Length: 139
Image 1 (cartoon, rainbow, N blue to C red):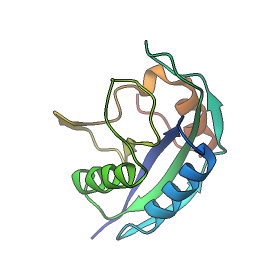
Image 2 (cartoon, rainbow, N blue to C red):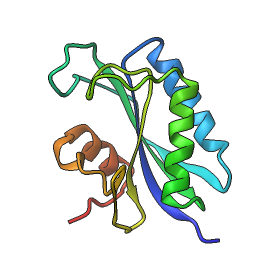
Image 3 (cartoon, rainbow, N blue to C red):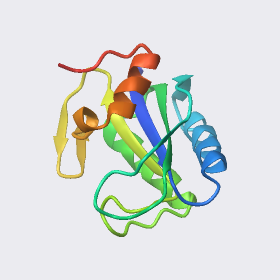
């Protein structure tokens, strides 16, 4: 099984945000056939979207994983749930958000999984974090 370099964005704006991101990193590093290669610094950002809420802590991880995109997504959703993530209002507050931003050079178009992440062009903090990790942006 080959590994793919994958960019995973972490975000939290509820609870002890720093601890939530730390637990997420630990859980991701413990996934089968997955290791964290690099991590950006943690950055506080204003929330996006129409819902009034507090600021987010965000971080980008660069991982090498042998998990297929769908398997990785399911594992990340389980990590979110373990942190108390409840899916309510779109773009609403959350304990943890784990997004697959890039998965090698692959393009995935499924109803609930799109890679590269469709919001990448609209999130300058993701672009900065990817640049800090020396990950090129898709054209």
